[in-house]
Length: 600
Image 1 (cartoon, rainbow, N blue to C red):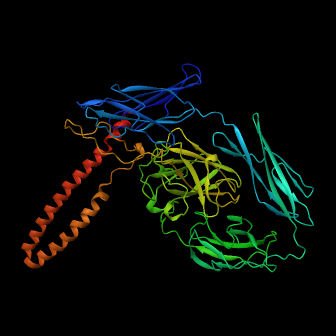
Image 2: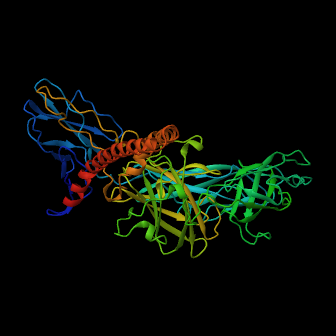
Image 3: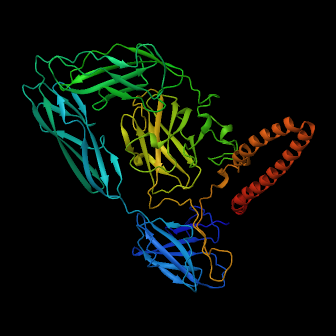
């Protein structure tokens, strides 16, 4: 097993960008080199190791664009050489390539490992601007609006503070940060707010019509909310608990428009760990993952608002205590059955991740698909307090399938309200065509691509988070960021982890021309566990053996004892022979990995 590099000629002659990544190979290595031809296209050269079958007739190369499938009836190249060049490919597109071998009887092998050429993204051009925010504001109140720019490469950017804002009404003013302030009106009034944003030579403008609502002089606030769950003094509450109030009631019969929920560790609410104003979580709220700690006392209260945003009194404060964490007995912030072995080094610094808990925390994906690590990057992070993986099946309306399931972590900052940067490591290769999604029980699913960077190592991403802002599910600038999410990889680019059947050659022989490659976990793989492999067999054999020995001793006395010992010895020798075979399989399984590490 040996490395393959991908290089692209950039800038002046002699300037090369390499390597991009390594490929895990079984039968051959595939090398990809690219060199742009002015502005017309790019020539891509592929090479691979030769097959040794006597009836080998040649090779076929297939290509596809990102998001498309291979057309195996139309090879991009066919021949007997072990190298080929594909000409004038679009330098702004991403291509994927595989090779198949075929014999004189037109039997064709399975795909080789897949490699890709990442085209140069054209300069993003501003295409549109949008304003988001409430469609109505009561008189004498304020409301914030957000301007979002969209670009030709599919990306978007919040440009609220860079945009120019204006309004067309004498009843309202809007400032440079998109905050609209309304004055008193005698009847409902409409105001049009306008945002304008310029990027390069392109300017886009957006408008939004907002209604200023006249509050009747006789309007009364809603009645004080009553929290039904949890009850005051409740113990052993779940950390991701479901809170609920009695139904909304208003003396004027006004509709329920918003609720504000607060959770604090102090009965005076001098600071909060969750502060949410929502038009959806009106009488029920499920606390997001990891906001609440185990075996801790908290206080919750809620306030209702009618359609005129007239607020009720706060509910009575409810005290509750969460249950102790029986799933994290050693208290290291990782669920015990999700902890990794002491040989795992996801960040590749030569030190076991378990030996540096102040820098990185790791956990197994709940479905066994791999291992995830959360590592501190910015100095603003004081500690990574907790990490847990989440079963996606427990969450409805998933937008996509997730490569390693979902996970959530909690970090503590040196200062409230600051930004933080973390690096998420994965034990398997990931594609930069994937998308990181955030999820919490209040805001639901969010595409987090704007604050996600895919790193060159092909196994990690970097996330930027802001306390109380983007990436923080507690929505409170309190020095703690809680960040649930997961990495989704498009099915068309997803790496195949299942080996294809070998192609049997017409001349007999042992098998495949080019084998499909399973993903190589590199130095991050955990060792073959013989004990786990033998446990079902041991349970199956030992229990009847003990019972049989008991019968022999009772029936034949000392003779039965001798017979029982001989029988036990025979079974033990069979188990030792089985152990040797399993161990041999484990060694063979990891042999390609050791060769790859030695040559890399």
